[in-house]
Figure 1 (cartoon, rainbow, N blue to C red):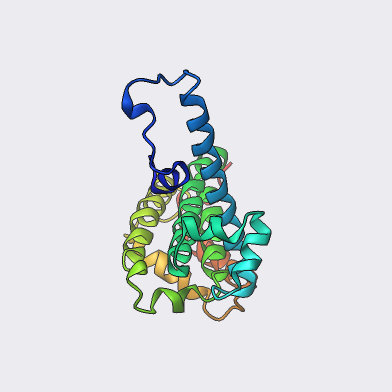
Figure 2 (spheres, rainbow, N blue to C red; figure 1 turned 90 degrees about the vertical axis):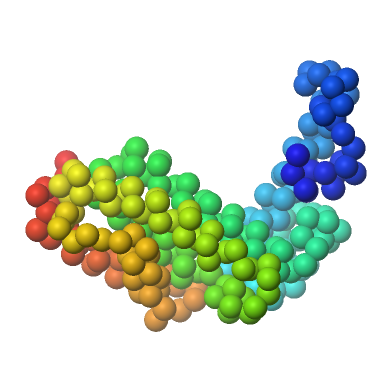
Amino acid sequence: MSEDARQETGGAPTAATGHAGAGSPSARPAKRVRADAQRSTDALLTAAAEVFATSGVDAPVRQITAKAGVGAGTLYRHFPQRADLIAAVFRHEVDACADAAPALMAAYAPVDALARWLQRFAGFIATKRGLSSALHSGDPAFDSLPDYFQQRFVPVLGALLDTAASAGHIRSDLDLDPEDLLRAVANLTLPAAEDDSAPAQQMVTLLVDGLRHGARTPDPA
């Protein structure tokens, strides 16, 4: 059980007691409590991400709770410190971006999946108003986030690049390091306004066009 779920249920044991099966009446209310706790957490993370994107990470708590439709007590129960909320939002957004890759690979030609994912990644970076300064604030709550960023994104981009290169849609002679490409795309977002990812996305389009140039199959079906 997650920490949030334990807080919601007051730490009371459920299935671990061995006396209530998953389908028993006593187990069902506990499941509902856990589901309610998860919905509250998801609503808070979604709302906080939207508020941070428009108002920055120092936005008033009431903006977040109003958008999420929960009380301040619920927010502080899940995230006692603002840094806890910022870190959770960052992880939530990283997961959403990374998890989009398999669906893109299933739905589009390899180079198109690569381009669409890089566009999404550029948008992720460009719209994180104030996040960079927060992550470099020295707060220990953020210490693990750079590694988490790399652990989620490097394998995803590596798979996209390998698939596109194997299909002949991008050049295979460049020996691209996914970490270097992530850093390059992130740097493309720096001149853009914090609430406008369009310039960065245009630059990503040019970058992918460069990867296509000289490929064995420049125009995938």
